[in-house]
Image (tube, rainbow, N blue to C red; front, side, top):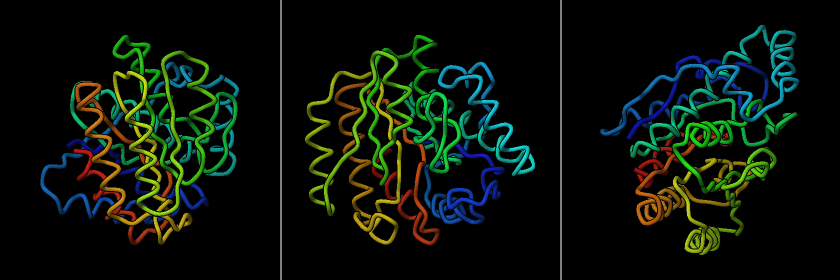
Length: 258
């Protein structure tokens, strides 16, 4: 299984919880302990690719904030995250399950605005890249972050062929059952992607899911991808702020997904 990651993403790029020093350390360590994971470095997204999902004003606004408040580093890392999302989806479309170990997250970035630690909508950029290239017509997005991915919805709802679901439920059984029921009846899709938010974890902000539940989410995605879209599946990191346990939660999810 491919893990898309760039060392620059390990460095702090702003003062938000998503950009904090050390956030990805446990994930890098946890994935390195398991055979079968291969790290791939992405290229930064281009201006042309960003314009698939965002207005020129939006892009300029992120650039200005980066230069005025973060010495330009935020913009550089955000470009790598967007490029990493595109790389992750492209590999998955070729039949290789893939996880984008990227930051900043993206599912709160809309066509013309951003908030919630997000700057560019990584999932929308990834899927619109595939659609523009003629690789897919339809996609399903499972957004299991604690917070509703309003940026995913804002951008992808402007285009035909995208279905997004944010699961509901308290505790493993109810939450996993909700995912299973919805995916049993999901529309046809050429690829399944996840906005993978680990802040639903029982020791994170959401106080909801066990580590084992993330593995089951990965297995549910894999099963439906094999059944409905030739196994094409991928996930992009969104939230998750328990630095100690984030790594094992990501690894458990990836073990289920691959």
